Length: 138
Length: 294
Image (cartoon, rainbow over all chains, first blue to last red; front, side, top):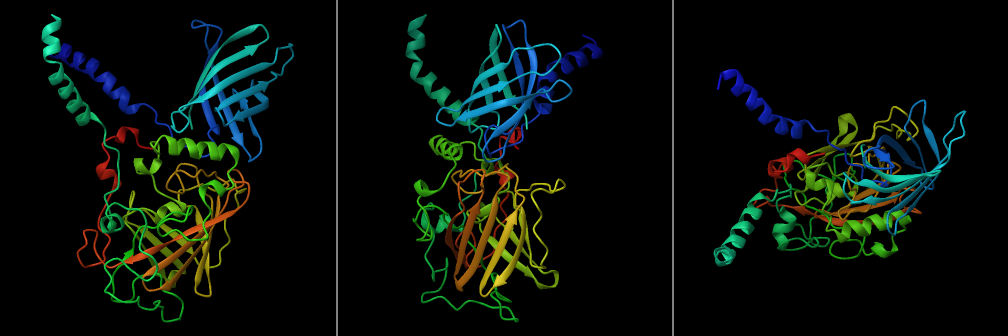
């Protein structure tokens, strides 16, 4: 084996180690468990997935927020949290020229005390149904 | 093939257990400070008038600075520091008899549920165990103690902490206003922004501007970025610091509530030898799981 190949093999073996060490860390957020930014995917099946970002806030009374901040953002009409089982219900109406069906998301906060907690559940938009999963980002 | 495996099963189980013990990441826990060492593992602090390592007899009177106001630190030429305090809920140990029981704390529903889960899982995700700084009353609950340093020329008090990541906090006495939570330039911090003034023999401190990256009290009472604390520090005798705090966080609690505890003056070093100096303790030194810090 030449020196160049040995170096190449070493670099290949080191990749997972480097990957672990540069993986983004999650900043602790120990207040209201929904507050922050969540990233994940949703879709009708395992092959058809779409990236999704949620931004959630809490003013002491109501939970508010939006999906996919930017030009195509969708502000939530209603967000409720049931602390007895950490279930979350979200309703949103996409805006735009075309008539788009409302979105309903029902998820549960998993591993509630962990800063790596996640939202796992389902969504419905018109006749489309599927699963929803997002992890807290910041 | 099965028989040899069964024959060696006890050895295999023992070896696996030993390996697991060796591989368990040791989270950064604090060494037993004077509070725990003196009391065989914690659970309260001495009552008023009895400092750790103090000579027998009643406490000396409250020390004062030349201008007459209470000295919360060691007198000139002296040493000593405050050991870890108790809890702002419940009435056990050094907690104040006026404290609420935890069942009486006016939690918002989400905050009550979150506190109960944190208790149920043994506080396994306490940020302090990952060496994050302890703001609020938590800064006075670490077993490695703390000191007040009043800088008269700068009109501020610096509090240095022997526990956690060895951090410090400023309390400004120069009359400056507290920052507004509506100020978009305000950067929320672990210790918040504190201003104080002497009201008789009590130092009254208002603080706000906290981030949400820590637990403000041992045990996991939740707070939000709306947290506003009013702390009252007094020294009824040489050996006793009385700490009382009003918690006002409308996002986590339905109304303001108050609790506190006393903290004993410590004459000894952490190992019980004479001296009264805070020892060098650094949380990160014990952290074997640093890839998961933050």
